[in-house]
Length: 272
Image (cartoon, rainbow, N blue to C red):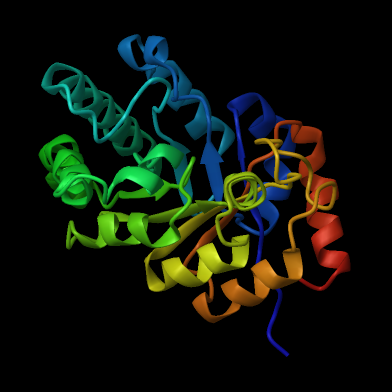
């Protein structure tokens, strides 16, 4: 019998302090959430890195960060704003280098509106890809040299294939796909997107990261696992062929739900 997949979690350093033993006991995947804000990235973030390194003494698991995303569009059509987004991505990679992190989550440029309009005007589908390249191409070499994979997370995405095709267009190990189960479930329930397990199957070998959160198909709930209506057996069945490539990161609004969520999934024989 194969062992159950090991769950990781996303959390700020204050929560790392309380869950340190749980993380280190099984060297679980960890995603640090302290570096998403502009004021942090524009300021002196080194003390946060120093604190993380001290807290994670003895940790040998796979470490990542949630990259900056507030107000950022990696396919922004305005060149001045696009330059700012590139700068934020570069700042995030600098943090990864200082931490020794090997993954950075960034947000998809695709919107619900795009789903109905990308093919309304000739060339718009390719335009999104080209603009994303203009944003990310300047930092790809840095990511590759640092061994950091930028994983593109679905936000409003209704078409699970478009983001995979965007990632593949870079032809680089430094750009891959992320799925957020709650975002996919929202898109399924509210905009007619496929169910969450279809998102997983679409991503296939490009899936290197997944945010596990429960939701009701109406909003971005980030509930504890088991509190919503995501079909978890179907999700984990779709993940099974991928082995341990995707980092299974519980991203919950209430961090006190991390351990109960892990226990709930273990009780179903899905993960631990």
